[in-house]
Length: 330
Image (cartoon, rainbow, N blue to C red; front, side):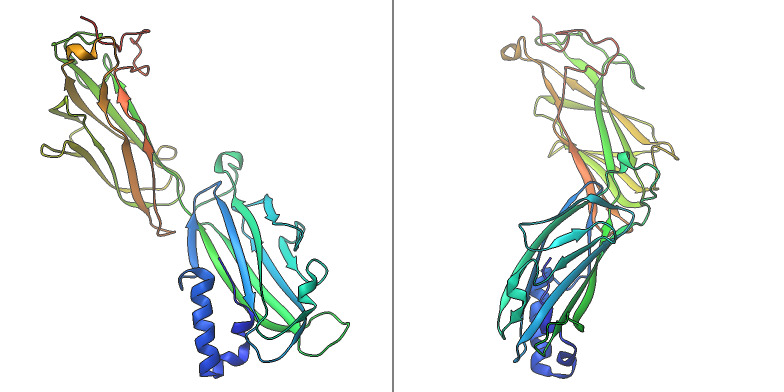
């Protein structure tokens, strides 16, 4: 995030050339003209705040104030890079002025500068009393200065604007393998045996925290030596298998906020089969590659989700699993 405050000086709104400079500066500042971005909980935000005096006159005692607000802000995370600027936790304001950077005492036409600061959103698990539903962190920037040399502090507002950082929901997935529990009766040797088919159950469980999610889905690929048996449960969940690509897709659809807490988690199971080869003797087999859950946060507009690691025959989540029972035997 960057700001070009002087270019946004009020009179530029009535000056086509100055307005053009402002628009170009806006692109540099934010990377795009969206005034809203999104992050997850406990997510770090690194900000670069740059300025340029695009006026034809000298400025004195320039002050840049950055106020960061919102219940989702982790106040203790706010840091100003270097010695240029200071942060007041009393009112959550960062100040850049001549006391912290002497270059702001007199700002000649064309002068530029850049300041850096970091902060993060609150870790939801560490602040359970906070309602994160449709929450955000707001950044208000105000630039003051004087066009007359004076020992007095700056009092003319040159620029003011704000940016909203929306907090995205946590869309999570549990991806587990089972042999002796679940909706299917699995068959074949356990531990798996060379040249003999064994079946396993894969269970996906999806949860969602504080914002509604649209078009959620989970996808993963079966390894080449793993067979799709076509058994899925429950029938109410939409699970598809692409025979050509080996991809398994669970089309979850919309998910309410607090799914897995206030509302039951969404879950689906499917069965796979594997025949170990002799060259896989004494090894654990891969049953399912990495699984990805993704969805669209209806409040922040961000695509959220995560990737869960591959499932092997080392199914420690199964109550009947004992050490080495996931390794292929003769």
